[in-house]
Length: 206
Image 1 (cartoon, rainbow, N blue to C red):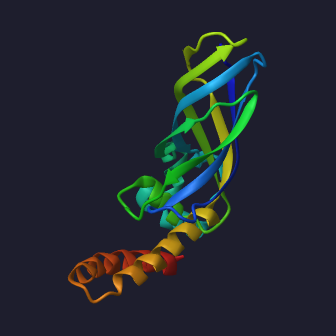
Image 2: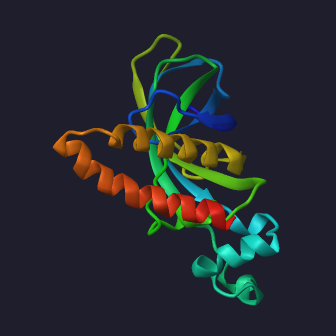
């Protein structure tokens, strides 16, 4: 049975995506050299390990709405769910690297959005918990199916700058697209204007 391990090697802005996304570079390796992995239907839950970093006074002020008063953070700080992701991994032997696209949003009702906007710099400790189904064969035999072990995780220090760079570029792109004279463009401009004001307000507050 396959024994897969996971390692996040880096993160960068998705340059040509239709929606705001970050790309994680994920390395998969199988400990059994006699097996060929035909494919993996992989799912991941991304958690922000918020207790594993220090916070500046200005960051604490911006995160009050999320965690309450700083003197109670020993009780109120808990891991935050960023999002869920999925990826179909193609066939490989021993190891491979795939791209995992992680969605981002301007929605300030989402805890992860508030959290990222509340940070001035540094890294966020990320934990990705994997599940899914592995299709494999051994010694040229028939294809077999096995679940991916639930205890498989990958930890990564995600730079806040990557997230902010993506949201800044998205904000500029939205403003450009909204500046049209067509009726759909005018309707969209109202939405863009609200998002732009919210984003600029949060950025100036920093």
